[in-house]
Image (cartoon, rainbow, N blue to C red; front, side, top):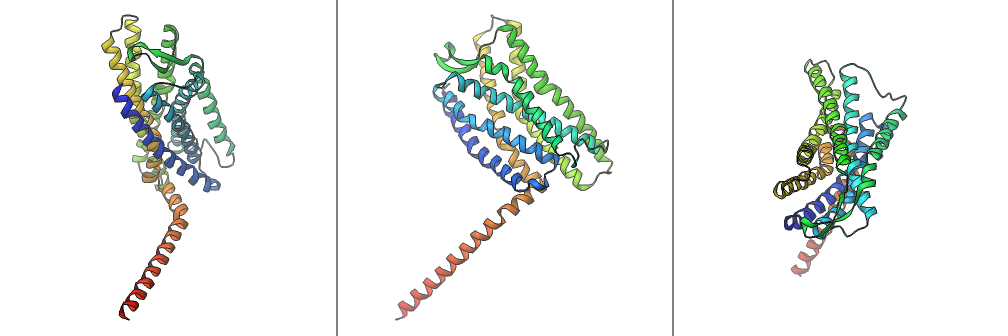
Length: 319
């Protein structure tokens, strides 16, 4: 608890600042270039919105780690459900992008046509609605309670019955990780095999590279949390009420660390767009070009004024 009081608020504050700046910049770039949106751009827009929604809840979790949950049950449900929706949206949207790239590269079939741009927006809307439905248990069962193992500290936690806990954890593992993971691994295995043949253009290869990096980053961020959560599910189901304090505490610490690591994924995507995405980097440079010219002009004016002042000073000293 002493470690959480210091570590989590600092880490979440940094994540909030950099995440809001990065994802906000992504949204500005995409909105500026909305007339030339590709299918991937629409999905990336929704990914950024999901990340921003999660970032907004970080101050609540930072206060929770420092002094306990001093907010209402409603905010507890909202923050927990937002976490669930963000996670599901992230992996489902990446799975949709993977399927689109798979059909485009391997089978030369376009799932989404430029003549029907509404189709990709409809797919994103369906993902959001499905994720909101999956967050219903959090709206029902999350509430503020006191944990005796933490000195009576109030915290936002689910109060599931044992049967509900196992069923919801299983649903989370299957729908929220394993099934999309199998889909993405299959798609990119086939894509990489096709790209090795060298039959695809450079532009399509760059697009696949960007999405592949995003998928890898997502798995690096969220796989540890899912492994620990699976271990906690198995341990709790096998032992029932005979859990030991040491093992339970160790699992609690592991869940805290890995979920915090997962939260930081909100800050990673904008960095990946800037370093890997050639198109995004070009649009970003186009966006800041007027600002660069303006700053350069001000610097030139300042340097001229400094030069004139130095000349006047030298002439005055000569007299």
